[in-house]
Image 1 (cartoon, rainbow, N blue to C red):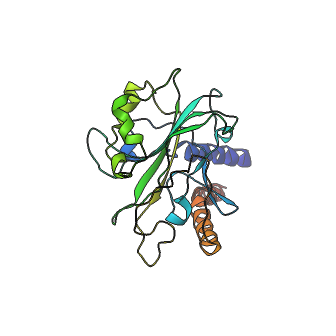
Image 2 (cartoon, helix red, strand yellow):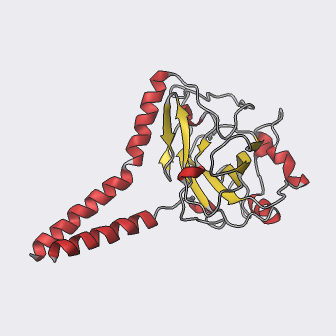
Image 3 (tube, helix red, strand yellow):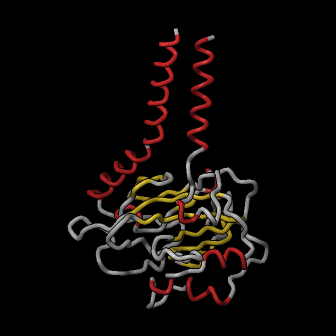
Amino acid sequence: MRYSSFFSVLAATTCAIAASVQTVPDELATVGDPSEILSVSYAVGSTAVQVTPGVNLNSSITHNAPTVHLNETTLSGSGPYLFMMVDPDINKTNPLYVGMHTMVVNLTTSDSTSTEDAICTYFYPEPTAGAAHNYTFLLFEQPANFTVAKQFSPYLATTSQTPYNRVNFPLVQFIKEAALGAPVAANYFREAAESNSTATSSGASTTITANSTATGSAATSSSTQEGAATKVGQSGSYLMSVVVVVVVMVMGALMVAV
């Protein structure tokens, strides 16, 4: 009976920890905080670096466009879906305005790229000095006959003014006018500015990878790939460490009770 109680407590604790995972940063809580984690990865050489909510990444990982894995995300339908990546920390205002990094439409759970359309091509994070930014992935059910209203088009364009034209994107207004509703899945990572001595991929200049889409792959040196992947692995193991600590505490309590 004691062991049965132990495993019941362990299962309940593990479920509670999993349910408490925050899929969006606090800045975007008003947009929606879906319980489903959107499966997203960055290609670093031949390694797929999986994004876990709140993980710290750097420019050697995020320089090229991410890959969205809808077939690894629990969704109610096959699609189409709309995917976007935004930076809510580029200009903290109320109502919420964000930096737009990419927007892709017509995604399906088949993960086929034949129907996808990157209506806003990817540009990589370049946070300024200071606190890390919470770069956020949002997935919405795409309405039938979806179109981008004229007033939003300049924010999505890739021009000589990019990325400056992507700043102050009226996210809440866009979601409302496009009838997107609340996001069905989300995820986010944190990235801070790197010093000139440690920056690898983005450097100090502002450039746009105009041919990158949401299924692009990274091209970085092998010396940075290994270190970056290790860093993500350490951050991604945090949840497991919490579970182990909880198990030890519960076992100790049961031994005292005996």
